[in-house]
Length: 127
Image (cartoon, rainbow, N blue to C red; front, side, top):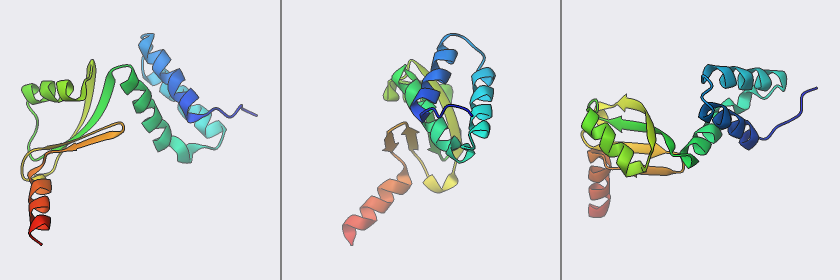
């Protein structure tokens, strides 16, 4: 029977491997095998979130960015500065309903500078 490790310890293992230059596929395969062996596959999203949190502490930020249009390289650079990342990995979503602006989700924080949010806030003030 496998030893039950906390999600934080699993994340620390993955981050240590990545910082040592190991290909990401190797520790992630090991974590997936561990989650299967210990019947903890329902925790996969929580483990991923814990890994992203641990990476953010090291200055490697994984950000979910939603905007009405694709981001250019200048905007990506500015987002990196805004979130204080040494290294930035973006998961970009184009959503026409935001109308304009950008919403940035990083571990533990959210910046919503979308026109959709601003219009909703203005509407709420008038009611």
